[in-house]
Length: 177
Image 1: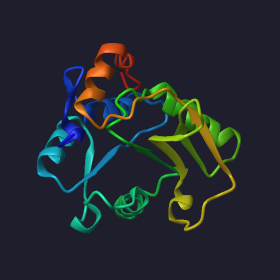
Image 2: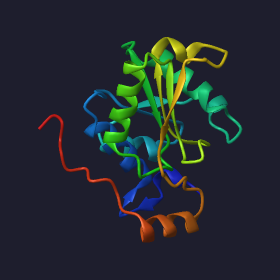
Image 3: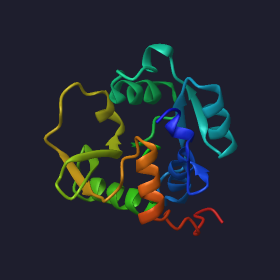
Image 4: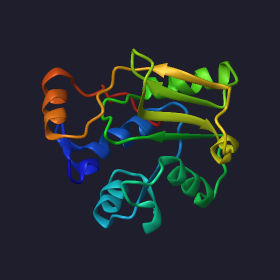
């Protein structure tokens, strides 16, 4: 699906839903969008996100997402306790799931929590990581999972299915209101 991060779902670009989930989280107080695309950057800023200029070397389809996360973590001015990485092509992500995953990481002292489907297959919707863990080259034995039923959108048919059989998260409670 070309330009899927800004492809409309439920009347908004997919990116909107990821940013809204961050805005609604009780624990996320800064949110960034890493992109090399001027239009995506403008949309992200209009939605209240800070933009990280992604180098061209990290902007092709073969780039490992972890390399993008490492780049973002090195350029943000504050060094947070946690990094939460979301994929815009999982527009069902809700703040309550992000918050529950963060709470699980803290409660069980994990280095990372990542989203999986009911078959425990990673669905790449989101990851919650301790800041220092972002830079490790090996997989931690202190990882955990958070089960979701999110649809990973890659085609127009995925969008049609999502809009027909699902609805957006209720983004009505403002944490800073």
